[in-house]
Amino acid sequence: MSGHGQGALTTFIRMQGCNLRCDYCDSKFTWGTKNGDDWVNYIPKEIMAKVEEYGNENVTITGGEPLMQMGGFKSLVNRLWDNDYNISVETNGTIPIPDDVINKVRSWVMDCKFIPTLSLKQKDIRNKNFVKSLTNTDYIKCVVKNRQEFDVAMEIKKYVVEEGNIYNNRPKFCISAMYGKVTPKRLIEWMLELTSREKHNLYLNTQLHKYIWKSTERRR
Ligand code: SF4
Image 1: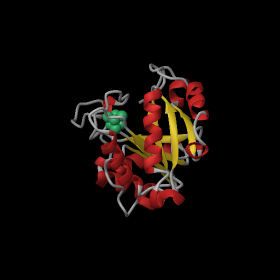
Image 2: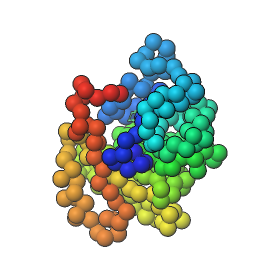
Image 3: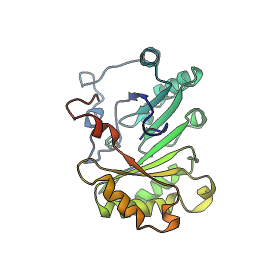
Image 4: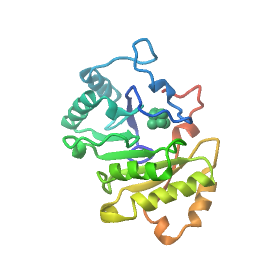
């Protein structure tokens, strides 16, 4: 899911380091922050040169957790903004969005994490605080692998999206099928069981890259 919508060609910038350790993480190579790990140290100017080389109008900044490198992150967003790129940012929602770049990002995509060590209430509070910053150009995404997680995702949607002062300007809520664990067809079946209110502003999302490329073919 990129904030530009699925199917749009997008240049991905993956930033190193993460403050979470989700057991199902498929990007564990982003966790390390020491030289010698499997990553390259670029300054924002060098990243811009790469972005121009790829020639896509859309750019997604992801991680790891990109907001952990706040200085470099803001510098990069400012450069992309100055050069008229459509920017989306994928984040785990644990670090507040900085005010000075919030409106330079076309879409913030907050990935809800099912972390066993956090209670649902803790997850909700964390998510709700972050979600206050989001508007109807932004997305909240939950990747689920079974019915239990689907039901939790719908509870989160109810708590953070459907209630309170964000109701009239709420972000889109996306449910994504964890590849190899549950099919998009099954997710659609569960979505069809929902009430009208629950279905509202709800979108199916797929881990498209996993359907297109085998794991050995995928670039990180
Ligand atoms: S937040 Fe994302 S990158 Fe970090 S551990 Fe969880 S799944 Fe992996």
